Image (spheres, rainbow, N blue to C red):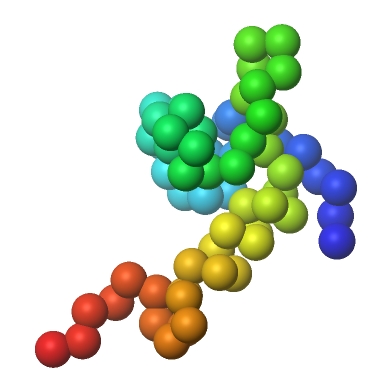
Length: 66
């Protein structure tokens, strides 16, 4: 486990999303983050956990099967 803390730029790059999308998701509580002194910070471990559980019980994520 790393204790790496990411700022908005690093977290957006890590997640391959725009900063605007990251701000929106963080404000909605969909991405775990903490606002400190007016600036968002994100735990790399928490972001990894978010996606580790994204597959759900079937492990298939959002993929739709015909």
